[in-house]
Length: 384
Ligand code: NZQ
Ligand code: ZN
Image (cartoon, rainbow, N blue to C red; front, side):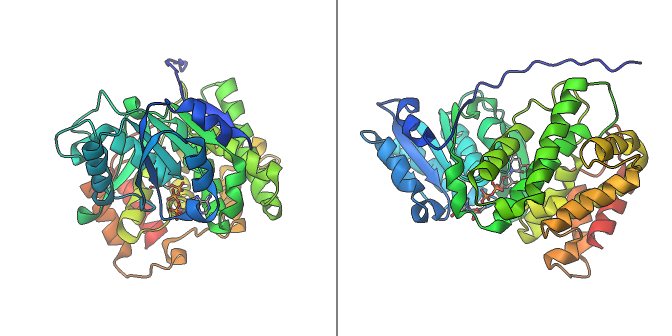
């Protein structure tokens, strides 16, 4: 039976891109707003972004919350929610990477909810309202700045959960590639791989004749591969602009419209961060090659297409494409097995597998008919 596209697409986040974009911030945040300015561990104080943002917001009342950590925790964000409630802020401006962006979305929802904040993260409560959110992006990777997803970890129970909050989709996102100048190489590597895997999750299933979606996915993946191959140019404006736009497009929603998608790499990989706080991008490079080997038959046609159109291989087998993906990750010094991330506990695979089971991610079905046995083999190959 032919596959039919069926979708409704609306992404109202205004993207303001370029080196002059901070100047536009003043026009995007209402003049009478009382702003909760949310940021991370202090990189914005060292690279000048904080000064530029606060200057652009001159005249507005600003309440600051610093210290949103990478892989933001419910525990930290609860303090930000308390501040938003007691100070009666009416706008949340996140200045940072995916963690701050996700934190801003959560706080915007939880500030208008009287129940337990974990209800929002666990899906027990679907927020219908949220404070308006704006993002000044400082790290291109997740696409969080213009999508409706967020990821929050409850430290107390080592649970890292993805949830969707349409009312907290950012009203605008400022994408100024100049902020990337202060990014350590490690974060650029993470960002490249995270964005690449976001495209894979929406592309690497089976052919459905979606010429536009496939073509665009391949263009974004080729761009990311080109950026990896020219990593020595990472301090140049053109390189930075391209990564910032590619990472946004990889997960703003457009590539996956009407497509069969997968997301199993992400569903397994979150456990590595929950257990050992491994960077998100690195958890993906650890899991994905093993997942592709396990699910190779279901993904064979798309892997061959990807080998031709992304990696430029002549008559590639699916195996050739998986090898090319792994080489691509290694060229960025990313781990492709848990032990390469420094985790050598003998029960590591058991712990990951138990967590995947406990969080209901062991038998996700999907086009590859992923059942418990397949997921367990993926986990044991990547982590054993
Ligand atoms: O906290 P600060 O001091 O700002 O330092 C950060 C942090 O240590 C630093 N950094 C950010 N911008 C910088 C900078 N350092 C110097 N110069 C700059 N311009 O980078 C470190 C990592 O930041 P983080 O925000 O944690 O990284 P990333 O953007 O990779 O976000 C990861 C989080 O996003 C979630 C992940 O699970 C993880 O929790 N994701 C969110 C998604 C979404 N909402 O759609 C999808 C993704 O798949 C992902 O799951
Ligand atoms: Zn991701």
